Every structure is written in C-alpha cells, then in structure tokens.
Image 1: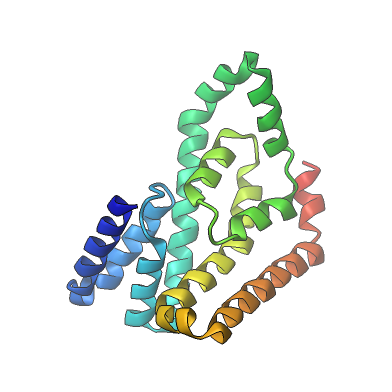
Image 2: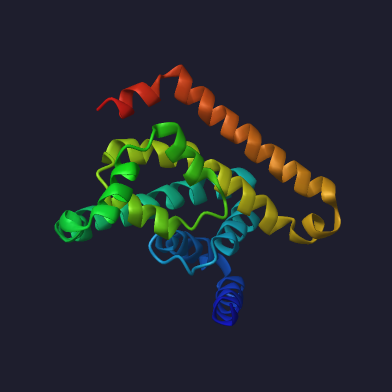
Length: 199
C-alpha cells in the first residue's frame, strides 16, 4: 500500500506539472493501466476530466480504457495462452476452473467487468488465457467499462464531497446501477447473450 500511495502521489504531481501535456500522458497511462494493475486509474481519469472537460475527457478516457484492456487481453491470448493451455492439460482442477471461464455467459462477463473494484489486470489475464472469443470480450468491455469510468470519474473529481456528503456517494452508486441497466437492455435488445454464448 505504501508503494501504491507513493506511486500515485508521484504520478499525480507529475501530471499536475505537465501543463498542456498532462492529458496526453494521462491517456498513455490509462492505456498502460490495463496491463499494469498497480497504476491508479482514477488519477488519470480525473486529470482528463479536469483538463478536457467532462464529455471530452470521459470519451477519451473511455477509448483509452477499452484499448488498454483489450490490448492486455490480446497480448495474453497470443503470448501466454498457448503455453498455459499445454500446462493445464493434466491439471484437472485448473482445467475445470478454466472451462467455467470459457463457458461464462456474456451478461455475467459484463457484470464482472463493470464492478469498479474488480482488478482489470486479472480479468484481462484470465480472459486472455481462456477460450473466450475476442469479439465477445471486446463487446463486454464496451458495455461494462462505462460503469468503471463513471465511478472513478465522479469519485476522483468529487472525492471530498463523497467522503463528507452521503448524497454524492448515493448519486455515484445510482449512476452505476443505471449504467448497468442500460448495458443489460442493450444486451437483451440485440440478443447478445444468444449471439455470443452459442458460438
């Protein structure tokens, strides 16, 4: 925790002193966050929102967030997955666990991705090592990550208010619930569970 706090503080100071380059560095760090779990996502999202405005900052953060997570998933898939599949051939317990990930429903995958405190690094790693189709994981990221972005975006820009005013925290939770409901509506509207889970 001390290392994390030290790193977070160092990056925060660096970005605040980067001037007009802060959003650029912030976007690069969001891309890397999907691969390196110890990077503090909320710092980068907050910097983008404060420097570029709520709409543009959120949109750019979202694109970088999706790109970083999918890149981590893709690198695990092409680099580690073949070796891992050979390793687990004779490991029945690990094999059973990985099969449960392989067969995870699309809606459950969205739910796991949308939980803000879920470590994205481990989700990307597990999905990359599994046989989850690339297209299925990409769409799950598109529908699940807005919840994460809303949570860290509001929490980062209203941290003091969240700690002192319960209504702000309730607002954050309500927005996450609404975002999740929208994701589920899109899922049902386009029958994505059926499209992805029957492949």
